[in-house]
Length: 248
Image (cartoon, rainbow, N blue to C red; front, side, top):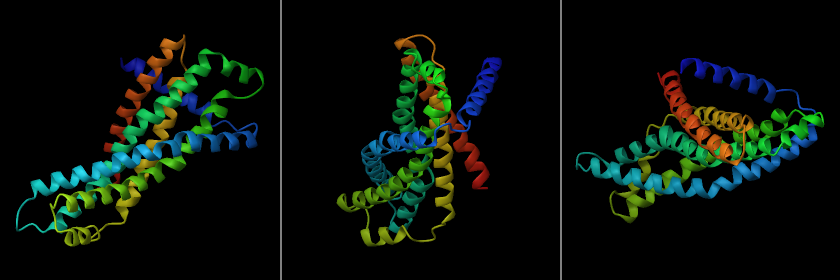
């Protein structure tokens, strides 16, 4: 099992070497990049917005119920909600969801191109398929994933505020002031660092599984499933590593 893991890891880094090969036709790469921004970025906004609002609302409800003590001011509840959203829920949970949506899309798209021999056609035309197909997707994820995470943070805080207001769980003025008490700006840097690393994982791991599909349509589906499992495992692992390194 360890041998298979190390062998797969070696193939993954060799694949990255092909991906970062110098682009042959820069203008075509740029066109592809903007297409991927639309496909992988803008199409995820509605999903991220829906999840973030209710994620913030649930976090406020749970925190308010567990800290239902007259000696605990509502500003403390807001601080707990803010830290939970900024440090963990927005960068990690949203990235895991994007791994399922965006990552499976990348894996299935590349897998379909592999089994229909479109990649072989690109190679015959003198184009490196790994670089041409994967690099724009990678840059699109690296650009848009942090934007989605910031968007998620904002909507999570809004959802948390309105949940406390509509359910009459907190004093909204005190709760809102708690969002700004003793805030550490480094937490934003920490979250965006995680978002960028997770974006790299989502784009490259899913592309690796899709690019190396062998067989037919059934294998494409299996590769898509394997990529989501591998991405989720890797994101959770790097979440621990980055937290240990950056928040010590």
